[in-house]
Length: 430
Length: 167
Image (cartoon, rainbow over all chains, first blue to last red; front, top):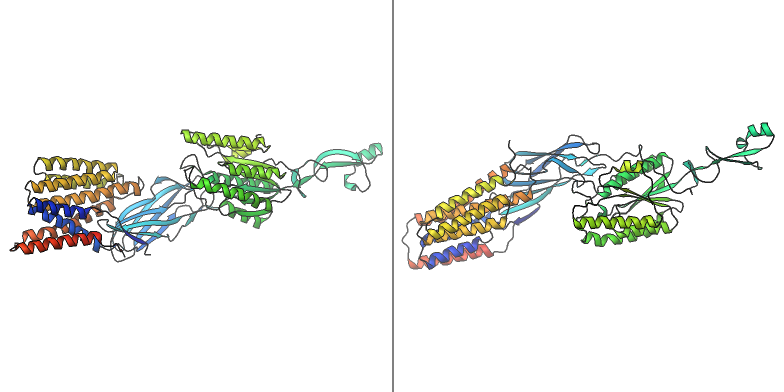
């Protein structure tokens, strides 16, 4: 655990002070100033010979609830021990709190000094978020007594390196689907006639109709043969396309959940609801590491979907005009072709995106242009507490208006609105 | 335990050291005025988290030490004042750093106490080294003094200019 060592330049300018004091002492015939110059020289010499403390730290992290419900407050304790045989005069620690977790009490950092064998602890409380969140290594800055040389190390804690559990899929959210083009029987009533439970019409008997469909009461009353038709119930392949690009990882406040986290929660809920309705659900993520899970069913399929929904998400930059905005357009453009190659022809697509850039609108319109029924669930990550943010808010509304204008229904979920409630009451707004 | 914001303890200690430097160097009007301004700079900078203000204040106090020396202060007094300025500068800068490096509620009092004590010990040791030649009385020759000066300048330059290769 060597880390990186560097001088802090804490006493930058001391040599100039030494020379100045010596020069003034000589020019003004003031011998008393020469020891002042000597003091500075002695301190410079100390700065040259002092060695940085060794990175001999052992860390143990514990959380009082490793599998909390979203919104629960969880106390994290981090114990640090100096396992070396030299004192560490200055030790600054910052715990690697997952970016999705908000610290609600205490502080995840500590400044202390550690004798050999000495320990110190820090504790803080975080608000749990949905999904599994991995703690990053602890960053420690170790300095000598005067702070002129430092060693920076990153140390992994022994225990509790992650917290949370994958989102549950079984009590998911229903959402009206748009299409009825699937080939597999299910619970979704679609237009057309065939096998099912919902009555549609009675028509004249034709040869080959199954006997179970013959209206025997009518036959008994009138002597005519007639066949009862029902609405067929079919399962649809549905693909949840989640915008997990860094540009989408934005939130109205630093403490709030990012749009990507909200989209992932919504996707998990929709996955559960649609699976419960016997639809075959697939997942696609548009993040830097694109993931594709073809529509399917079964425990193994759900397991893979859970893994996708639990992937840690880094919080995006506040800088709208920065590098993130520039590079993010390309992945989505490329994602259109990537998605088109994979989408089954009969699939319905639900895109979950905060719609913070034009590229994703292009993607939605591109899918719709294929004739694929598309819907959009859009968690609103904007705020209106400054002129710039209000502008971003208007731009987003404009984009959603464009999407609606192209015939794609949108559920717009407000910044403080619970996404499950919004889905439960969703009437697609056009 | 009352929660103290990171850096407060160090800022208080730096201000105390600056007061010591002001008292020791405040010989003559110029030294007093410049020293007082430096003291205010260090105190405000350390408590408000402005590293530049701490450095400018320390520069002012160093100017006061030089002015005090020219005004006739003794060597032990000036070395003491110089050491106090270094402590105020170093610990004051640490106070400003801790404000930004650690969270507001973080516990840093042990680090601050150790740092203040460690910096004081290192600076006092250096002051001891610096003052020793004035205490030990030797028969100085002009050539000897000249060589000592050249050696001092060379050492200072070497320490300041050596390529940095930390291990």
